[in-house]
Length: 254
Length: 315
Image 1 (cartoon, chains in turn red, orange):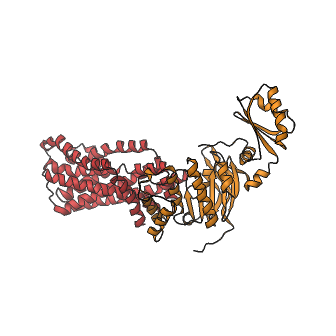
Image 2 (tube, chains in turn brown, cyan):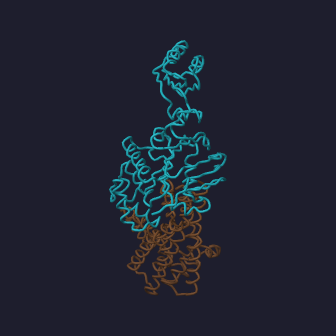
Image 3 (cartoon, helix red, strand yellow):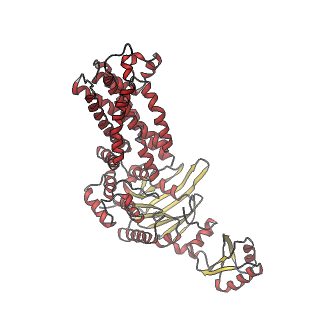
């Protein structure tokens, strides 16, 4: 199972590595986001009640946003595979169905981890202060990986069920900004309307933002970090189950 | 490796499959003897591909049962998957990967031991450049890679769904040679779907004609052809004209007259003797014939007779 998952992941990784333009975009995107949001929201720190530097605040926010937006497109690969006939060839093999999803998820996670490390280094250059050292950064990376894994599976499941690029593009575009703005990714929770805080309690992007911020930059709250990590792990499992089940639904429609 | 020998490598009974209002399979029965090449013929939408999807565990029938290599496809799909090789209608290889990478992934999906040697052997046998990206392969090479992928785990039963559609004549001839070789030397059971009658005639030892989700005729190519005694007359008209059919109906000894575009077909006991009368009848209606041919029955005629319409080539 592990071997098959890894082989499937290798396949998608190779596709990425053979597209230099894609690698450049993947690496430039975090830089643009960090610099752009950093400049745009710089004066946020002037709002009474905002604590600390904005680079410190923003870094975990950009990390979680990147994780969702990068992993959200994972299902495109499956749509491509269904249209080209590769999916049918994989499905008539005796391989474990979970390996097809997890392989694609592994590729998404690897890409997101690389992007996250880039953001971490860039933010450090911009004066970010990782108060809890390397351990805190490790949790930040773990959170990004979990969030990416969950959204990669969801994207795969939607891709297999919808089988149309347009549907997946619509779903990602529709979900990305609301999830970001209904979280503490860019704005301190105490400064947003009450209802957004309430909705945020059910928002995985918010779980990720809270956990990574607390672990890497803020006042370390182990209870918060552990509970949000737990929720994210739960979401990863459920979404992986959903994506694996989607193959069965697809086959029944054939 | 020893293999269990079943009388029939493929058995399907009363398969029914509907998509919305469309009945793709309407009680299809099929038996394919172990070690033979079986041709499943029919136009697009007749139910060939649906049959293959069910037998290869990709899809499930609404009702009916099927077994491949003696294993029930509904009860034990994973074991069936180990026993079969599938070369689908679409190109199944990853175009963004090399031939070798495709084969290695395939081997891992089937947990093939000693994979590297097996991949090298496949590349050599199918004359494929393993380290080139598949998107740079010619159409014939891509199809050979598909077959190599389908055969990599040495399946007992091979499904070839329209294996030569879209190939140029040279690549098609190569593919035919390879299929014949598999059947001859490896005694592999092959289910071949095609809408090329010539292909079925050449490769398959037994045939079934599918139309509207049912088998309408079955037998060896010769049996099917000999069921049609006598000759077929084909008249190609200069211009299509509905009156032509009526004109021929008046000629004595002609039967099964059918008009398909500009081509009139009719059957008769002695074709040569009927030609003058046919031409005279057409002339009496003021119709001109561009060509007249008399032929022994072809599978085309068999198909026309059973499926009630001419065989249409092309997707």
